[in-house]
Image 1: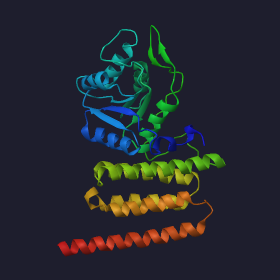
Image 2 (image 1 turned 90 degrees about the horizontal axis):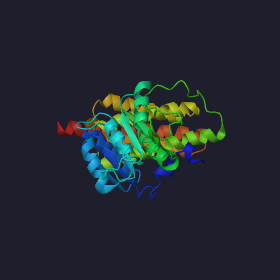
Image 3 (image 1 turned 60 degrees about the vertical axis):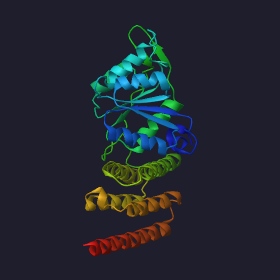
Length: 311
């Protein structure tokens, strides 16, 4: 299966062990979440910079392979940081050892004008907030496996912009270009593998953070929304149902401290089992749903007893 169709090559253990990634973001929760996600995916070294000026200092002394830069930061924002990095390709700057370092912009802005401004500054890729494991890891994969020629001209310095900019899908609604159904056998397999890889990345992030907090619960719901949509593309209604059940559970609990990580894990196991099985195995699908319902009911009952006893 080609690398452009799956994230598996960036999430297999050891693939990214030699990679150094700098995350420049003044929002500590977002920076930590991205750091945890990258480490869970196997990235060997991740460092955090709280603003663009600090990021420039770390570029000089640490020389990372990839830079994530938030658009809005104090002192020096992501666009200014990117421009200063690219300018070093024509005007020597002792703070910038590698003017061609891939820059992945973190932003909540997605208008055509904003995208053009970032591209003109020399940004390689974009991650739109709120993000999922797939939207972050796919951009790392893109700059690693699909490097573009570096252009130095009188009007532009940065990666070749002739490839159309792609904004990572991160919302519950499907895009107009997404098909209602994936018919091609290879693409169906790629879609199912993408679901499995993103699910495993999510599990690793939760494991790395040691608990379910507000950010990971929100990410879980986004991943389940994506999984539900992709499952319907390949007409896997059981996976779609399990995804919806987990969304319903999270919404019913209302807060991360009320969510039992074991209940989330039960749903994750069910989806992983279904994705690993042949699509035509209806007996397994029925069995998984029955086991899921029984396990969740038992966990809820135990939780209720524990809460009642504590009261």
